[in-house]
Amino acid sequence: MKSVSTLTLGLSMVAWASAFVGWRLTLTREQSNSNRAIVLWSISILSAIVVLAYSSKLSPLSAAGVALLPLLLFVRKRLVAMSHTARQILIPLTFGSAFIYASASLGVIQVGAFPAVIGALFVAVLRSTLDIEEDIFENHASANEIEVEHHYRHKLALTALILFLFGTVSLWPWLGELYGKAYFWILILGVLIPLAFFWGRIRQPKMEGARVALIRFNRIAPVLGLIHVLAFLTAH
Image (cartoon, rainbow, N blue to C red):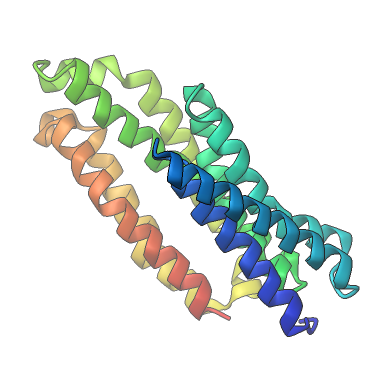
């Protein structure tokens, strides 16, 4: 791993943290928060510029990775409120870019590539199932379990495809060598098997009801996502 100056790493963290807090402040309609957000955006941009100008140890690709997360947070703020499709795309990308950002700040952007793809696919699955749950309670609260499964069968099929891609990328043959055997076993036992089990309950509405199974999946998935992140942190 390439060594990176403390200043470079510190400034890149300031850029990310300022961008994130600024974005969170803009979610409210209070004028004072909007003004604070503008200040934080300015700090984020200036910090990113200093990182790019100061560090000769970051490759152009790594430098771009440092700027990716603040950029996506900014774009997400501008587009998500206007477009449901933008939300479906940008939320997974923003989560995945956090891995790129962390590895790029250390000058080894390639280490974050697989975690970024896996993280984006995982969040895409959860975002889709959360949207279905929200729509059920808002528009189909009185529908029976079979009607719910029938109404959302196409979206559930697409989500299943994303889930399959998530499992495929997670078990890429090279990952065992890149991240160690601990990653592989934690992933299999702590993430993929539980995901497959709870997803299977959604696809069998006569067993316990698609609505109940969907809610259970949405509650357990964030925990499995955390286990997945911990797997990468402990498998090196």
